[in-house]
Figure 1 (cartoon, helix red, strand yellow):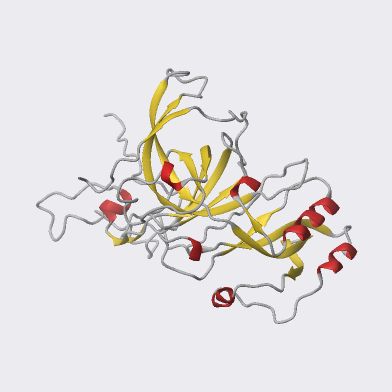
Figure 2 (figure 1 turned 45 degrees about the vertical axis):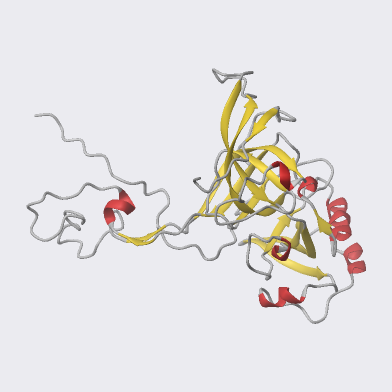
Length: 332
């Protein structure tokens, strides 16, 4: 008799499959980069997808150098505003915030998102920070959704952005100059470079085991139901183990996609807006980026970018794009 082979249905790699804490994704790590200090992240709002014809830049591809059609995602990236500098020290339990230096010019809508300090320290005290215990330098940046007509809200989203560089004093001075000012996507990335993307996936609510784990339907002669798991486990141990595929939350999970290529950074919305606007979003009115492939989440979802942590290749520079589809997405 041959051995029965029954591979497990559904990956346990993302367990527990529960709802994300919020709609703003969180990076657990940042890559260490040398050179001149700069910001290592940015954020925008997903508008939708279209397709473009490009000269295939992938050297090992069978269509290298040829004109190919690729799916692309358009993300609207209005300028972000830096509101504070946060310094970290290293402890036995990880990084710990040492101090913060906030700007005095804060948007009144920001108070609806976070506790805004009533008294702020002078930025001049940054020059007297003890570098011996300093481990990391980051800035607190906020988005400006009021500039985006496709996102019906005014309350900004708040996030940390790391400042790269090998010289700690230069990183502090760079962050100090950014406080209270706006930063653009061009301060973070150039065309042809790779990024990591983090977002919250499209929520699908409470679903059964077949949709959640991909298990087979039971036989039509089963005693009660078909869309359930055959057995929830043995009598002992007298509890349901976590490996049993059960019903629960599907979607609205935080996911990170590595090594996504920036094909184009544009300022003219007319180059990318389809006839009738993007579905469930409308028309873009600010700067935008074109990303090769798809990114998690529905339209209007906040998309965060970061320098790649796993990419070992080289940047391709400006990508030759011959055509971008602006046909209507309305199904007509």
